[in-house]
Each structure stands twice: as structure tokens, then as C-alpha cells.
Length: 156
Image 1 (tube, rainbow, N blue to C red):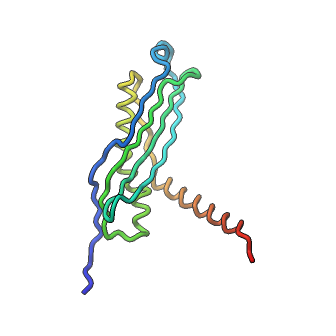
Image 2 (image 1 turned 135 degrees about the vertical axis):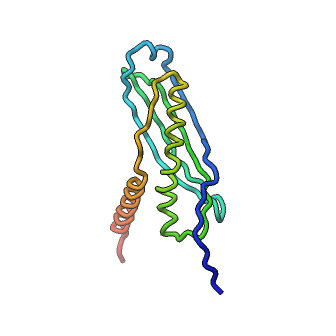
Image 3 (image 1 turned 90 degrees about the vertical axis):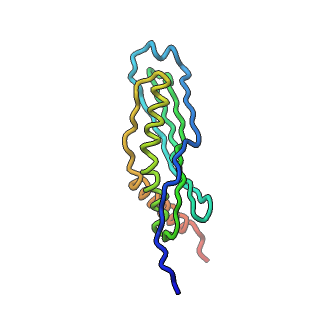
């Protein structure tokens, strides 16, 4: 007798896995007009914890330069523990690659802003990120890389 098991998804916990704030040119940076250049580096990933749990994370590095000097550097890894069961493989990957990062991003955004403000700088609200589009780009890049790899294989 086959039992119809419904897919299950639940957010268990949201947490900061790693964080760092540096302001190497303080207090001198506070004596200049603040017109920063902001550089953002962001990526996400996931790992299986056990049969029913996955850890999903977003890692961000934000560098603010003002007049050629680093104002601040923020590095943050925002993570979440998600319980998932009975989810088909073709649905699991987009959930881990797009849906879960979309859930985590507002927490990452708030944490980065809080660190910057506590460092004495004006608030920094990161623009929303479309993780669905990033996931689709990653799939396209992986498909292209696999195709190129296939072309490089010698044929016998």
C-alpha cells in the first residue's frame, strides 16, 4: 500500500554564521565629504545537513571606498536551516538556489545595515536581489560549461 507523502518545507532557524566589520581609515575618513563607491560581491550556496535538513547561506562582501580610501569593509554570511521532506529533486534545486536565499536576504540586508550604522557610517540599504534570475543564470553557465567540456573531449 503506497502512502501519499506530502512535500514538507519549514524554516527552522535563521542565523549569522560569520561576520566581520573593518573601518581601517577611521577617524580620518569621517573628516571628509562622504561620497562612497560601493562594491558588492554576493553569492549563495547550500549543503545537506541530514536526510531532512539543509543549510542555505548568502555570503556578501561590501566595500565602501571614499576618495580612494577604504571607508569600511563588511563581510557577512547569513544562513538558515530549512527542513525539507518528500520534495522531488527537480523542485529541490530551485528551492535551495532561489527560494531559500530570497527568504534569507531581508535578514542579511538588515544585518549589513546595522553593522554599517554601528560603525559610524550612514545607513546602507542593499537593493533587492532577484535570486530566481541569478539561479537561472547559474544554470545557463553550467549548461554552457558542460557543452564546452563535451566539445573538448577527444572522440575515438
